[in-house]
Every structure is written in structure tokens, then in C-alpha cells.
Image (cartoon, rainbow, N blue to C red; front, side):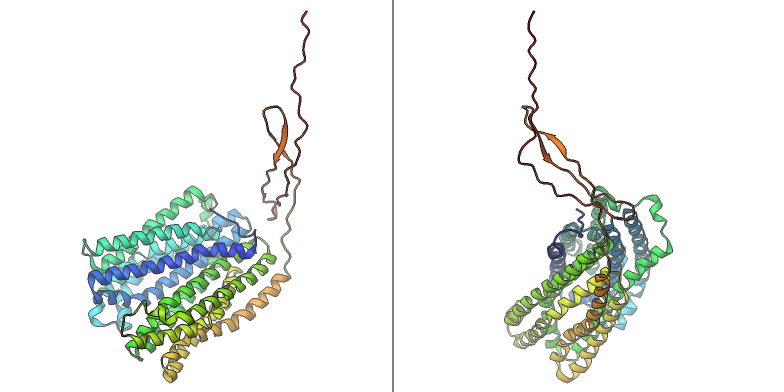
Length: 509
């Protein structure tokens, strides 16, 4: 259900909102694990490698689509926080139109580019054909992926992060079942594995649409709402494009790091892969917190509550740092044992290298926590330039460290590329947020108008007594965007005087 993030204790609101996001990330990781297990067991190592060979390319293009649709939801959250429901509907219409256009472009263009891109990435010839099939089927279903991400984002924009988690879980469970059937009994190979993902995402889109139709009238777009202006489309693109580019920049950095690892040998590649699986849990937690902050800030910015933004971002930063310190300590202490869950016996060199990477990252998770929270706050405020610049800085820092330090110090140098990228981004993000913080501190709070409340007498016992049992109040949107505030009312200890209902006796004559 929709929840206003403009009321309640900031730290509690952010924490509760981020829990479903974290669980969603975990569900996705479990799904990817199960999907790879089915393909590897049913079709063999080469088929699994062919699917893996498309990972960076899919992340590059579909990651852009995910960031784009997430950005489209920020104006929706701001309008919802301001209780401007007409603007909410216009935002949903604008985001839907842009998502549809991007879906058409990806669905037509990406399948045609699949083989040239995979050849450019030097995919081994024995894997190329299967990799092309998997990529083309995945891109043909890009519309389902984009609309599921967009619908989930606008539902979260209203303060509901639980419903998208439910639909994501159902989609992942359906996906695993379809993969087993399409790869096994149907014998459709890697194309069947990709088709299973497309079908499950299409089902999740239908579930989201039905939920919005039944439960979320605030998101119902009317005929006149589709007449969106160029300014409205431009506002959504100004937020969506930078977030999409950030995801693409991360993907490019991952490609370069992969090339650097390939020069260090098989053990280095295996160690980095195993460590990244464990590392992904910590990143998922901190990333979920950052997304929660962006929605929280967007709603409170729209609602004219700079005071809540300041408190919420500060409290979220402390939560992120505390979680990062605990996770870092666990990974440093038990990193080797965790890595052994992913590799077999006789892989001592892989375990040692992976444990070194977890120790390096674990010691600097607190920097990553600050990065996600501050970046989410700036995005929630509608700032686009600084988050985009920091994404570019991350790219150059990660690539430079992987190439230069990797050549000088080997695997440890490559492993250090992530923390150095985080430091480079935070050095720019923190001053930018401090500047925005000073502006927020000088921004007046949108006043609330308190209206008199009339007690509603509720009939009590049947003997004729009457008590004031409750007072019902509701916030009402007033001209200018202000809202009425609820008046706290305490239940009276004593009932009103009893009303006598005795009949007068009439003497019989």
C-alpha cells in the first residue's frame, strides 16, 4: 500500500523502506544462481559459458534501461510528497511514454547489434552462436524488463516497497520453473533459458498493472493526462538519462577490469569472481539503503520538508556506516571460510587471493555506504550533474587502478580498484551535498494549517448514555499545496451525562 515518507521517525521510515529492496536484491541473486545451475547441469559447461559471455553486454544495455526507468520515478515521488495528484498522473504518463519509446529502440536495435558486439568483446568462437541466441532473445523481451522496472519504481515512489518485492519473488520463482521446463523437456537450449526470463517478466508486468488498477487509484492516468508537455518529458529525461549512464559507466568499468584480470591468469579470474559473489551481498545492502534515501528525499522535497531531509540523510549515513563496519569486520574475519563455499578442495591460491580482496573491500565499505546515501540524496533532490560526474570519476579511477596498479602489484592492485573508485566519487559527492545541505537549511518549511476539529459523538451503551469515543481527522490539501494537520485528541475519562429516557406516567382516569 502507498505510504507517505513525510511522516514518522526518519531513520525508521528509511530502514523499513529499504528492507524489501534488500530482499529483492537477494532474491535476484538467488535466481541468477539457480538459473546458472539449471543451464550448467542440463546443457553443459559450454552453454553456461555462452550465457556468461553475454553478461557484460546485457548489463551495459539493460543496466542503462534500469537506471533510466528509476530516474523517471523521481518526479513521481516528488509530486506524491507534495500531494499534487494531478502532477503524479502527468509524471506517470510522461514516464510511460518514454519507457515505451526506449523499449521499442532496444527491442529493434539491440538484437541486430548482438553479434557485432559479442565479436568486439572477443567471445570465443565455440561460444559465439549460443551467446548470440541468448542475447537476441533477451533483447526481444526488453520491453517487459523495462516496464516491470518502471512500474516497480513508480509503486515505490508512493512509499510502497513491499509489493514490488512480492512480484519480483513470484517472477523469479516462475522463471526458475520455466527454465527447468524449457531447457529440459522442451529442449530449447539457451534460447529457452532466455525466453523463460522474458515470459516471467511479462507476467510480472501484468501483475503490477492489475495491482495498480485495483489498489492504487493515485496512479490511474486519465485521458487528459496523456497530453504531457515537452518540459515534462525533458524533466524526466534530465533525471533518467544520468542514472542510466551511471549504470552503463559501471558496466564499462567492469569490462576493463575483466580484461586486466585475464592477463593475470585463471586463478585471479576465479578469485575475483568468487569474492564478487560474497561482496555483492554487502553492496546490495548499501545500495538498497541508497535507493530508499532517494525516494525518502524526493517525497520530502516535494512536501516542503527540508528539516526531515536533513535529519533523514544524517541518520541514514550513520546506519550505512554502522552496517558497513559490521559487514567489513565479518568479511575480514571469515572471508576465507566464505570463499571456500564457492570453490572446491585444492584451490588454496584462489581462496587466498579472494580473501585479500574481501579484506581490502571490507575495510572500505564505510566509504561505499556514504557514497550510496549521499548520491541517493542528491538524486532525490533532482540533482543530475554531480551524480553523473562522480560516475565518470568512478570509471576512470577503476580503470586506471586496474591497469596501473594491476601491472605493478598484480591481483592486489586490481582488487584495490573498487575502493579507489569509491574514494574518488565521495571526494566530489560530499562537498556537493554539503552545499545542498546549506541551501536546505535556509529553505523555509511548508507551513501546515491546523483546522478546528469537531468531536464526533459515538453512541455507546444501550442504556442511553453517550460518550465521545473517538475523533476522526484527515489531512486535506488546501490551495497553495498546504495540508491540514491532524489534531491530537485524547479519549475523555468520563462519559457525558446520561440522557434520561423514562416515560412520564399518565394517571389513569
